[in-house]
Length: 196
Image (cartoon, rainbow, N blue to C red; front, side, top):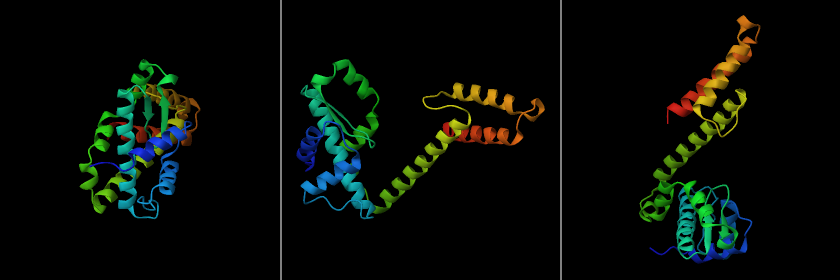
């Protein structure tokens, strides 16, 4: 199945070298392509299909432009950007690609994932996304309670927890309420890292 967004996506990537958010990208596509529905009108299936077609086009362009030596398309929900080959080396492209999920790219390149998706499937997918999003937000808050920020390892978390717990323990003159916050943060982090 040919993706009708290939040419418009290529045009917009080159027109906006500073990059665009997914939302901005879709809005610009809606202005240029009559067949793009009003994706953010509340219809989850329409939203999914628009998102899928965009990411399918972006990943196709990413592979094609790398193979042709034209550059790299950085595909991320937070920002989509074309990086011309003149502004990076082959090793930099390798590093950029290593940071992207191959499984995710393969998912979007398989058009069966678009045609087989029904409204109920999309709603389940979105509820799972929001559960992960909330868990990730809680993780960042829990890290802050321990005085940490990304990137961290579980060893970093355990060490920070032990230090904070010793410092805040009431038997050592610490604050019992603050210790409870530290304990709760550690429990959230254990749940996040071990219940995946």
